[in-house]
Image (cartoon, rainbow, N blue to C red; front, top):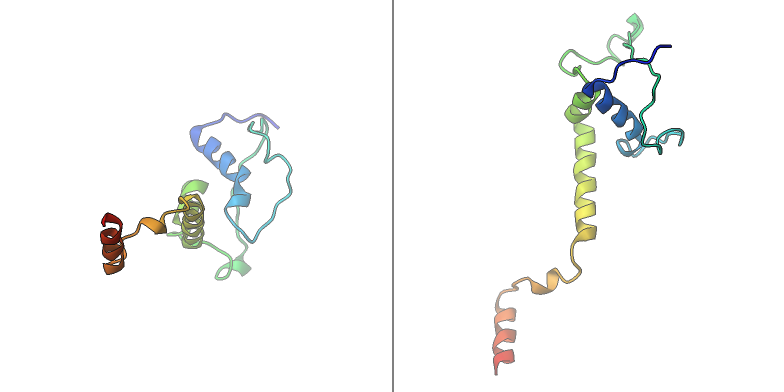
Length: 118
């Protein structure tokens, strides 16, 4: 198998394949080569051809087909919802602990401020 030339699109696709376990929470993959930071030297890229029996069930429409793997993942609505939820969870974890303490709570905060002054 000859070593293909690495274009920027191929590099992005290979990085996405390495990070595929972070994309879908329901799928689990073998550890394999995902921990190494180097890209594989020898690989092949192909096209999936669906059979006639999968015409309605398992195929992508022309609108859903994109040029690269990254474009397909960005246009996927389920993945977008999952990413959005995960980002919110991470932001909540990293929020400072005393954040709620400094919120203005209407008249109660004004009374406490007056009591502190006197």
